[in-house]
Amino acid sequence: MPYEGYRVYGPYARKNGRKFVTLYRSEKDRLTVSYSRYVVAKDIGRELGQHEDVHHINDDFTDDRLENLQLVLAVTHDIYHAKLKAMAQRSVKEQR
Ligand SMILES: [Zn+2]
Image (spheres, rainbow, N blue to C red):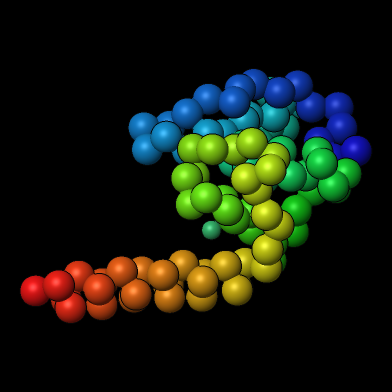
């Protein structure tokens, strides 16, 4: 199981609403991961790699319910959000 032997503190929200958990094994051995990554890791039974991301299906990054989370490749995730941003900017210009 992922994060075996760690004590879990959280989830707690940061100012922007994103939730995190801090995992402790000892004073020196602790790590903080986003709650969405933690939830998906627990579901699939392994920790996520650096090349993997969690996408919020409804685009609400405060909504970390498992059914709102999708495991994606980090590279395609970045492209997806860059395209969405570009589309949003274009539609703002068209309205002027
Ligand atoms: Zn996303």
